[in-house]
Image 1: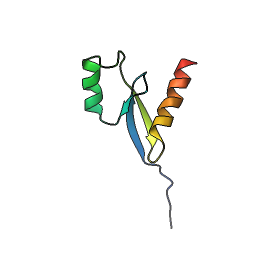
Image 2: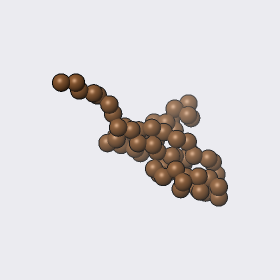
Image 3: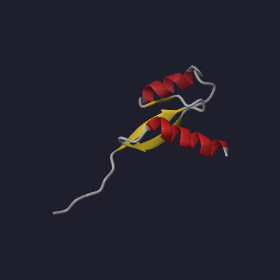
Image 4: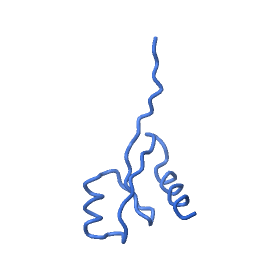
Length: 64
């Protein structure tokens, strides 16, 4: 029996203020109206992982 250890990933779009969503079209719309004063960044997060925690980690890395 062959088992694969593939992790399902979900795409998250987030901004510098920590706001995040999972809808690419909405992220692009929010950027087009400059809703957050910055453009979104894309992040792949394993399904089931705490998205807010993953986003916060990325923001801390970017600030360092």
